[in-house]
Length: 132
Figure 1 (cartoon, helix red, strand yellow):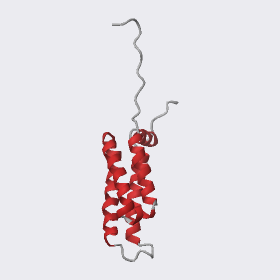
Figure 2 (figure 1 turned 90 degrees about the horizontal axis):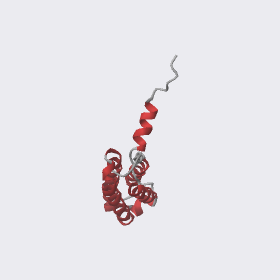
Figure 3 (figure 1 turned 90 degrees about the vertical axis):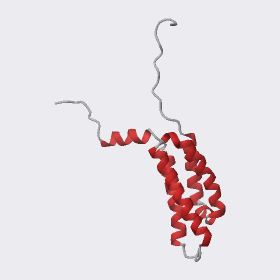
Figure 4 (figure 1 turned 120 degrees about the horizontal axis):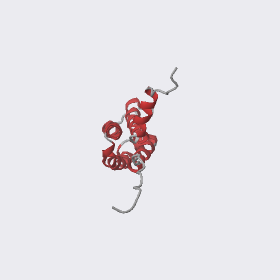
């Protein structure tokens, strides 16, 4: 019998998740979906959404795209993080108070996490011996 541990699907998922700003993309996507859902459902007291509804759909879609971008191409995390930070401030004014503040908070934290994420680098081994 072999006692070697074979890598399973869970270790592959873990490696993929750690190699990119996963939480940032998740929060950006959830914030975008929340903006869309607030304008779509209406919550009963928002009978007519008007231009705020169109802005919610547009901004929500852009947030979801920014979240997927941080997952698919982590090198573009600065671009999508800055874009999401600006759009989250715009959503306060244009999209029903940023999706009743919940969408704004999710996207603001997601954009901050995208900007703060640093890729994991393998430790370098120091050279032995003298100066070359």
